[in-house]
Image (cartoon, rainbow, N blue to C red; front, side):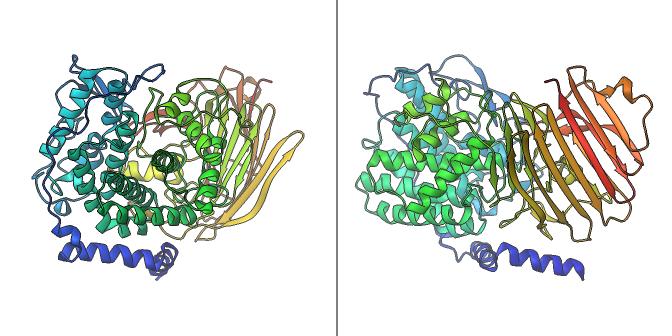
Length: 629
């Protein structure tokens, strides 16, 4: 009975309208009622970009890590900005897993007959990755800088893609968001080549057949309340206004629909403090890059501004990512789902370097530059024709984003991030009261990440579950019951919120929750000049409560003073001036180091040391993570 009640409450939280839209989409496609089933169109096969007439840009260089340039010898590209694959003048196999070489069976089927997760080929994202067309951006950059062979390769690859992906057949037409990302990348490449208003007829037709695929299913994307909706709305606006500018009357309708949906998504999915609906740093960047591409496009074509609410939410979202990004390295907490997505790659900066996105977003929506120093994060603006503001933003400060449950605590070169459950939208991970700790761009206490959306059950449970986070686990279960691959039930609610408090000696914050089985956890965090103090109070559980600290790799050993360890005390040092001390008012049932995992990139996992402290009765832990002054 409890399970039925949990599902009913979860359905209500998701929104009955969203559930109805998703169900109507699935039924409509299955029965052939949705017009997407009746789409037919010839694939334009000719020349997509003409000779480059604009002068090279004054930049340090173009992206080199995505595609080979100008029919030169083979080199290594990267999938998900991590996994090396051979790249040469020869186009890749668009219908195969590039890491295994395995083909999707019957890849010429209509897209709606292809399952999301096919055991024969594995994760379909691996097939989609090449067809997101990051290489279009890279080759367009090289062509703009005077490489005529790169332009030849750009047209040759595009022709090959069109040959092997006839309209609406095969896996690369399955997802409206994937089609939308192609449209956005092709548009930004044309902007970099200065060929927006002089686009070739074949490219215009290519854009039109993509919008025909996106438009009939966009309501399904809206029902997800995530970046599917922002991506597809942006593609309709960008592609539709492009066609309109080129004299295609059908474009105006798509552009108007895209504008309306973009404004709706900004108002609904982005909170007043800037949190995006997916509670994920990486998906936040995807959304923000999408908004940046849309605004660059609007400015380039001289189109009317979006609504005041859209601008305000885009500004808040920009400041949110600025607050979480380390200014020294560009890295940010690995919080929330992370599928390796990276849009608008116009620099050779690392996948985890968020500074190019932050610099562009603050320039567009705030009118300031995030980083005073010149670097690749400035080149992005030049490629897209965005002036670099003269005003430099004040350094990132502490932020309480109560619209999504994020406490960003900053003090000098240190940052602590406390997650607490404030769910207007479905949570993606069991990370309530998780703590990230950073100093000088190094993650000292971190989130496990995601690893893969299509992996074995234990890995899915570990990375998305409570065991992959710096928080407390009760009775060996997750904080919420899993109802599906991407759905949790019995969403937690915050209790005992202690708002962010800035003091002369540090920064304080706290929050708590009671789960569906009445176990309670309350956490207080105090960030000071030489470390962080964390106080955890737990009660209401049946058998056990386990506190986990997931540390940076290192040789953590008991310190000399800890040789006579009390039942509720332990202390460890890593030989680099860092120490971890935990005291409890009850005895530890277990104090043990175990091997954990973290995933900094999609499909990658590396070992990390994890300290597990278990108690079997209510009590309080006080943890000190300290470093030398």
